Length: 90
Image (cartoon, rainbow, N blue to C red; front, side, top):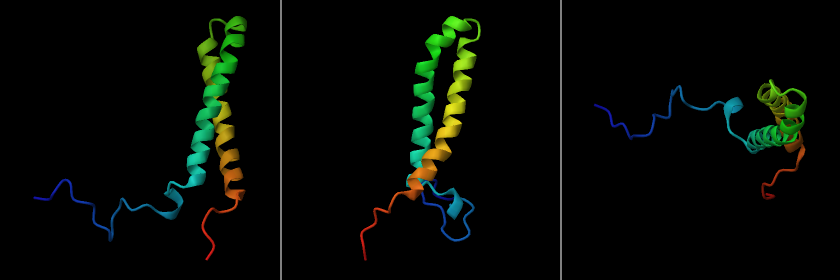
């Protein structure tokens, strides 16, 4: 019987993160920008759309937020990659 709280084995583990799947500062910043864009667009779009299209308010607002988040994530990630590294000099 194996210990359920034991750490996974290091060598040959299928759970090991590859270089492309690692959570970096850039990906965290992109996720934050996408979330912020979604929330801000929802707040800005809801009232005008509610007046113009009262039957489709939530649907249009959600689609606008998804579009904003889809555009914000790669833009923020690209911008964060251009910033200088905060690593101390050697």
